[in-house]
Image 1 (cartoon, rainbow, N blue to C red):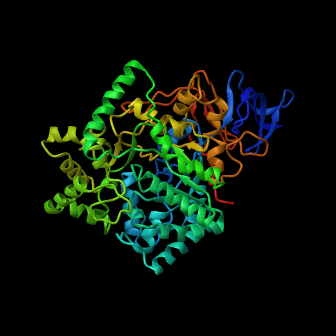
Image 2 (image 1 turned 90 degrees about the vertical axis):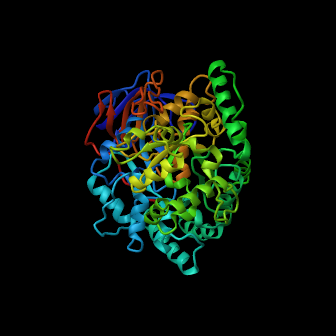
Image 3 (image 1 turned 135 degrees about the vertical axis):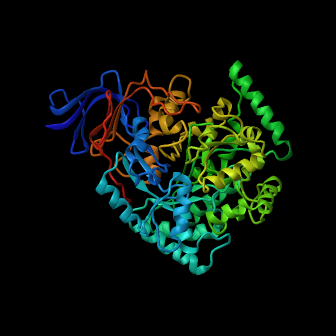
Length: 576
């Protein structure tokens, strides 16, 4: 007798192959049989007639690890499962919950606090990846999770929050910690080269870390130094690391935002006008050709046989912490030093001047220049408050800094600095080149969204407070609804592949992402005709329609009755 049989569904197996009618049998958390199982019996049976049966979605670019140790983690992570995510990978963008070492423990904790909007209490303890994962296993987790080794955390452990290249002994310490983290089960190493302290590395440092990855077959994932006019340089840097070390490369949440220098206000105005025209008339504007041009070195590398992939978030706005947009010198010495600097009127004026005068450049050697000066590219209005910890400032969430500046009779930059000071540096923000939910900006991502080697990710920073991004609730259903139905550009099979087997292959996650015998029973039952997002920028916290069952390791976690609290069906994933 089987534990579960799913009968009569149309199987989309995750490989890109044509859908087919079949029954599925599950036993001991694995897919035991696929075919005609009319005579088979099971403890539980699901009628999937008229529905799609697919692998669970695999989100390889998540920050769920920052929330998984919180007491309320089940409530915080539930939106991932409700949209069909059964597996996620944490430790992305060079930041993560492990390892925490004695060296610079305070700086590592402060670094992570900026993203979780809470005090992170360690009680003086330290832990490696092995202990972190073991603790999750003991307590239970609602979905499968693996980890990358975060370069920024490794760098803080080796040298602290320094604005310089590392000495030979510091690089040796960092490489040793990376080796240990790979031994303990990391799938590879992530970088956050736009963020301090990762921004202070050079290509040589990355090449040295790549040598360690090559010993373990680990993947090198990268939040690039820049996504503006220096994007080609950024792509070339990570491809070089891959080529010289013969390792797989994954380019994180790819997008392109051109820097137009002195005519930026005019370009922004033109974009907003074009968006209004696009919304009203619906005439296609080939804005995606810009990103297509940036893909040429990636496509050439793939043609040459380099194992390189990318991922993309199906949204028109990004999100990160506010200090990420400040000049790197401001963050030297850690977050407390940064708060001291922005609290001093003279230093604050210097920071503002560097932002207004500094050019996004390559290489980023000048104090007043760095690879992606976001405010210079979009103006102060390109950023909106996402989340703050205090009730006092919650009224700011969702609003732009120029809007708040007019209300408070302050310059937008002073609003930012005062808010950072009041919130101890813990301010999450949205960023967009025009306005939230701009369909023309979303269309600019179309080439990446349809590319066969680009997987779909959420980039989730789940907080359980404030204004979440809509993709925390609807990333995969939104993508499939827009791009794998009707005139979206993808077949159902290809759309599902980009959410399942492709990301599993890119990160080297075994036995996930496909409907085939012997694979783990991470399965969705989807009412394809009803599948749609119910989330927007302004009303994000709504679950999608159409995800009828979410089964993780053979256990139904979401049913037509809703989320099944306390099941904790997830497993901790380790490389090999």
